[in-house]
Image (tube, rainbow, N blue to C red; front, side, top):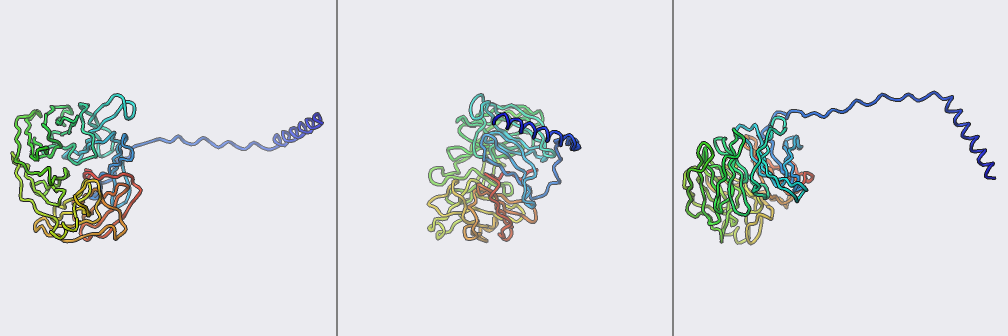
Length: 386
C-alpha cells in the first residue's frame, strides 16, 4: 500500500512539473530604488513655535519644536538625561546641557553642552562639562545665556552648588564659580548672573571679559523660606523679574543692580479667596505677555501652593493695576489641570499649557480654547525657540 501511494505521489509531482514548465515564467519586478535619508531645512519660523520637552523616557529626553498653529511637531532634538535648555542671543543655536551614562542609567557619566544649529537641527559642536550638571525637572534658569550673549551659565549640584561658565565664542569652559548654597542663574547684566540662596537672599556674581569672577554681592533677605517660599520659575517684566510665592504673592526683583533690590509684594488672592483655599499650582505656574501687561497664573484649591498639583483655573491679571481681569475654569470645560504654561509674545498671543500628557491652548485675549491634545507625552514647556 505504501509503495502504491509513493507511485501516485511521484506521478502527481511529475504532472505539476510538466505544467509549470509549460507556463511562462512570471517576470521579476525591478528592485526598489534605495531610500536616501536627508535632513530638510527647518521651515520659516512663526511666532507660535514652542519648545516641548518630552520626559516620557528620562534617559533619552526629546525636545520637540512644536508649531501651535499646525498642531504638530516639526522638528526634534535628542537631549540626554534631564537637560538644561537655552538659546543663543541671536536665536541661531540651541544649547543643551545634559548627561549621558555609558550603560544607560549606570556606568561612566559624561556631562556635555551640545550645540544645535536651529536652521537644520544638526549638532554643530559640543563642550565637555564637569560631571556636576544639576539633574532636575527642566527649568528655564538651570542653563541660561548672559544678556550680552557671550557666556552660558550651567547650574551644578553635587549637592554642593556651583556654576560652570562657558565662553560661547571660544566654545570652552571659562571657569567654575562656587555659589555657596545658591542655585540657578538669572541673567542680570552683560556679564552677570544672580542665584537664589537657601537663606532667602539673592547672590549676584559679576564676571570679567574672560569669564572669571571679579565681584559678588548678596542682597537683603527677600524670600520667607520657612513660611512662604517662592517658585524658582520667574518671568521678566520690564527690567524686573517677577517671582511668585506659594501663598500667592507676586514679588518684583531688580537684578540689574547689585546688590539686588526688591519691590513690594502684592497678593493675587483676596481674603475670601485665601479662605476658600485658592493657591498657585504647577511647576511653571505663571506667564507674562509683555506688550499687554497681562499676567496668567494657574490656580488650584489647597491648603498651600504646590508645584506638584496642576491648576484647576487660570486667573488673568493686569500687571499695572494688579487687578484680576478674568478666571478661566478648566474642570468645568472638561480640561485637564495645567502643570506649566507659557504665552507667545506676538499681537495675537496664545497661552499654552502643559498637562503632563499633552498640551492645551487658549486665545490669550479671550480664554477661548484652541485645542486640547493628550497624545504628546510628558510635554514640559520651555522657552520659545529661536
